[in-house]
Image 1 (cartoon, one colour):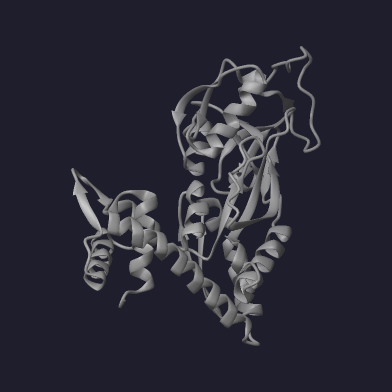
Image 2 (cartoon, rainbow, N blue to C red):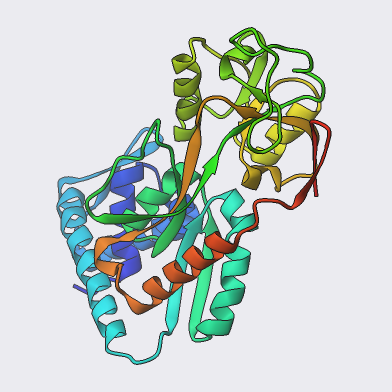
Length: 329
C-alpha cells in the first residue's frame, strides 16, 4: 500500500480523539490538512475509512481495522528509527517535544542552550499543549518525549508503553491577597508560626471561609488540590475556575481569592501577594515522558540527561520578599 506515516498517524489519533479538529490540534496540523491525509489514505487503500454522523465522524469497519494495524506499523517504524540511530557514532537528529506553559517558560530554554553547546547535531522542535494531554501525545507518537506533571494525591495512570522519569519535586505553598491571613491563628488556635522557608505557616483548613481560584476538577491539578482540601476537612469554595498560572496570580493579587502555588509558578508573573507555607505536604513532580522502546535512543537519552541537569540547576529563588509579601521579578 502506498501510504505515509503522517496519514496513518492521523487515522490513529482519530480513534483516540473523535474529531478532525481535535486531531489537528494534537498533531499541529490544520483540520483541512488532517482531512487531506485521511482522503489520501482512503485513496491508497481503496476503502471508505470514515463516515459522517451529524457533526462528528466515526471510523468504518475498514477504518477500525486499519487503525489497529497502523498503530503497530508506527511503533515498528519508531523502533527502526531508534535502532538506526544507535548505529551512528554522533548524537544527531530531530526531536519533537511536548510541554506545558511553565516548562516552556522556565525549563526548556536553559536546556536548549545546553543542547546547542553539547549536542549541536540535535534539533529540537517543541509544541505547547495542555499538561494532561502530554502522555497521550507521547503514546500516540505525535511527539518523541514530553515534560509533564504528576501529583502524588492523583497520580497519572501508568501506561506500560511509556517511561516516566522524575526531574524534580516542588512543594506547594498558599498564595493569598496581601494581608488576608494577618493575625489569623492556625487550626490549633495558636498564631501561625514561620516554616522552614521563613514564611508564616498555616493550614489548608484556615481557608475554609475564603474563595478559591482553581483549575477544573476534571484536571489532575484541580483534583489534587480538592483531594488535599477534603483531607483537611473542608470543601473549597471555587469562585474562579482558571487554568492559566499567570491569570491565577493576577486574580490573587486583585484580592478575589486564594490558590496554591510553587516557586516555579511564582516566577511566571511579577506579583504582589502573600505566600504562606502549608502545614500539609502538597507536592507536584515535574517529569519527562518517552516511549519505553525509545528510552535508549541516543538523541532522546541525551535530551533527558540535559533536562535532568537543567532541572537540578534551576534556582529556587529569583524573587524578593518584603514582610509576607512576595514580589516576583
